[in-house]
Image (cartoon, rainbow, N blue to C red):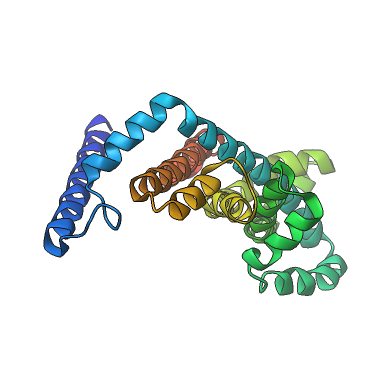
Length: 255
């Protein structure tokens, strides 16, 4: 196991070195000025300076808060709705056409309306993030409940299990693998939703920082914001994988 992880770390390090080399080669090949494609050393230096000043951490914390709250609200709504629609077919027939139709509207088209309704504060960004998270969680929850083995439910009934025991000991363990698959999709989408909201109206956050850097033609700062956003997404995704291993360890043993 330790050897496996050590190989993973070596591969990650090698990929970073390759990325660094390709970046340097592209600058050398195209002779790009710093305002178009800065050297990675310049970006790294700007990252260190901006982090020491504390401004970068402030923007990261704001975006992370919006992402986490949006993810939690969207996930809770998606799980509850998925459970209800998978158990009440009439509710599914009534609501699913509207839910599916709503997904054809790009979130960036809805974001200005949400900002108009909820203002340019945290609430509008959280709402945008929760909206984009809702659908994959809903579908994964419905798929999980629909895939429960009916023989397992019959076995629980044969042991005179009550509704709560069936829910906790049969349904929830069966649904969790599908639900976590949806969570892995929803986590990056939650980040996208928060950034879209910040693009359209914000005075803090990584989306605001990206807009600010682009407006000032400060390309190194733009790269700093983009890399910070990517690292935030990777961190949240990694936390999701750890939680999945803790909550459903039997899936890991099967895989």
